[in-house]
Image 1 (spheres, rainbow, N blue to C red):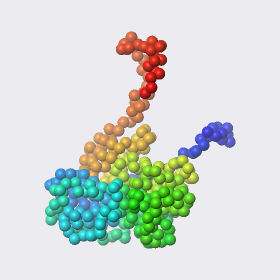
Image 2: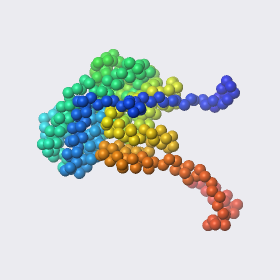
Image 3: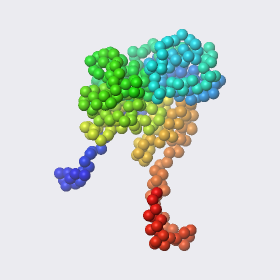
Image 4: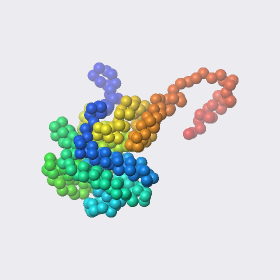
Length: 367
């Protein structure tokens, strides 16, 4: 503590405040018709698959997450399904070069029965792919990223953009590098073998420790990362954060925020934008959780992982189950619930009464 000018003790470090963007009911991104069609066909495909294949419900959540990340990520996923599950001619480029262990693409092959796609399922996938490919240059989230980086001048304060998926990070970095920032080094921070710097659309690998040093020294002001960047990376030099998509594990959202809201941050307030599409699974979850999240976080210090199941329930249309999960989160911290009150107890009703020597012996025993 230090003494302020008025003689009142002041903390040595001030808390860093967070200004949230994208949280209002009207702040979700409208789905253009072409994107809405792709999303609907993905849902129809998942419904058709669920009628004959075990595990298709969980698969639906994975597919919608990827389509909701970026148009490019969704198109790559549908390409993979058509190429590997239907034997159709698709993008022959090796997908593994663009994926990481943290990605869930491998989980798409849940069972052999799911891979044997019917003609009707293949048709729905192709319609979804056509809609996604028709407007790659009009990705709604990309347009929002441009607005915040340049019109709102978030880039001037330094920015990190998070996505769950490496292909979304790669695509976004490529677009920004070629179209807006040809001379700006853009960091891609992901797995050890996939991290580096992109300049004018050209990528070169760089050791992640070197990336950290360059960010700390102020040489780099735009970082695009997967959740590999949400732990062990200190980005106090950056003042803004954009969540391109929202992780379904709520703890990861807190870890992302912790990259810039930390001791050493040179600003009193950092800005965070959470993106979601109107009417998407993320939007429906947000509608259910928005009134409770702040209270839950204030109570527990983080968001309980049990709320990850809310996303799955919403994706499967089980709103009632999702609501039960949210309502089941306690309104009081378990520790406070058990120990915050002292009740008067008649000592004669106690099973054992200790003498002063016995009390000292019991209390001196380590945990």
